[in-house]
Structures are given as structure tokens and as C-alpha cells.
Image 1 (cartoon, one colour):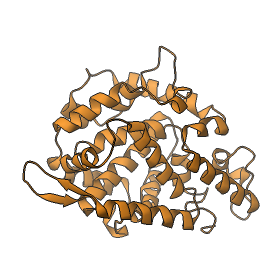
Image 2: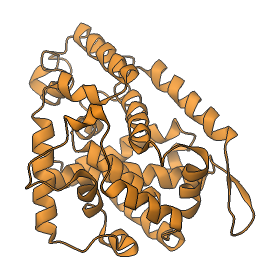
Image 3: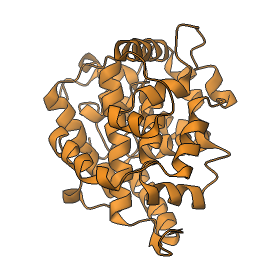
Image 4: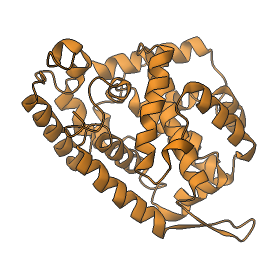
Length: 299
């Protein structure tokens, strides 16, 4: 199975990464990542994030897709590409005058943890039913994804308890810099690109997308930013569940228009390989979250 896709349909990763709440989790992850001063400077100084935040989100979606649904060759290829880009980039800290590598293990680890914890926490809060054991399994599986950006497997949290400990260790280094505050203000009420506007819930009862992402942040992160007044957590959860339900009801070909063309091509190839291996792909990749669509030998 490993020669077909990196993470098989039987994995916890498959359950989380096919959930449409990933869009909220992705932006929430960006907001969390911004709290690390050097990580934020790395983005600020080396990308066009300010002009095209959803471009970065879609590139992240492409990476996550390839190290989940892609073939091992595709995952290795994008891993080499990402490591090569990071290796050449530097971050200048104006406060200390020091220059840091973008591929510093501490920075890579923070970005990874902020990202995957956001995917997991948003999906579960939105209604994806995962047991504690499955949640631990998801983080354990994501250690493999972290190796593609250059982290060592043993240095990456592989359970919810380990992830909590990692955040506790990192929190003293976090703060709201002017760049972080500017980034979150920009993300709060974003103008979605054309490809995503059709996916954006338009009902007045649903929170605007950026605000919903913000309100799903951990309480300590929202207190640091203090960008919006607090609202009842039950309201946030209800809005997230409505958003998730709306996106999860979209047919896969419609939803996949939000991805870059290369990502869509990779997903089509994945469906073809899985179909040839005996999986019932009549309802797309998302349909394979149902074990009844697996070959008998895989069930």
C-alpha cells in the first residue's frame, strides 16, 4: 500500500486531511505560526504573503496533499524542493542583528506543530469523531510528514500529550510583533480568491471566514492578540460545525477547484492508483473514509 499513497485510507491522517475544516485549520495555523517572532520574520522577509495569503495556503495544501495522498516519489520530490528552498533562505533579526537560517530545526518544528495541531483540533471541534487514541495516531503519523521538511522523526511530537508539552515549552518565546499583528488583521476579513469564493459560506448566521479562524485559536493565543472581542465558545463551535457541514456536503470535483491545477492532477492520479488497487473510488477520495469501499484484504 505504501507504494500507492504515502498515507493509506486506513490511517488517521486520511480522516483528518479529507475533512473540509482543513481550510479553517490552515488559516488558524498561520495565525499561530505568526506568534513566533523569527518564524514570522521568515515569512515576512522571504515571501509575498502580504499580497497573496491564500496563495501560501494553497501551496501548503499542495504540500500536505502530496505527503498524504501522493506517491512516495511525489512526496520525496516535493520534500527535496521544499528543503532546497529553505536551505537558501535567511532571516534577519533587526533586534539582535543576527541572521538565522529558515531551516533552523526550532523554526521548522514550530511551524509543523502549529499546523498539524490546528488541523486536528479544528476538525475534532467541528465534529469529526476521533478518539483520543486516533488523535494520538494522527500526530504520530504526522512525524513522517515532518521529515520531508528536514526534521528528524524522533524530534517531532507523536501524541497529544507530547504536543501539549511542546507548546508549553515554546510559549515563553512567543509574542505579538508588529508583523504578527498586521498578519492577523489581514487574515481576519480576507477577500477570498475567486476559486474559493464559491466555497465560502454566505449565510448571515455563519461567521466571516477569517474571524471564524481567529476564534478557533487557543484562549492564550487570542488573549495575546486581543484582536477581536471574545464571544461564547458555544457560538464558535456551532459556527465551525455549520461551516464544516456546508463544505463537506460539496461534491469532491467542486471542492477540488479550490486547489492549484497541479494539486488537482496529483489527486486524480491518486484516485486512479487506488482504483487500480481495488478501492471503490466512485465517491472520490473522501468516499474512502468508509471502510466498506476498501478491498476486502485491506478492511
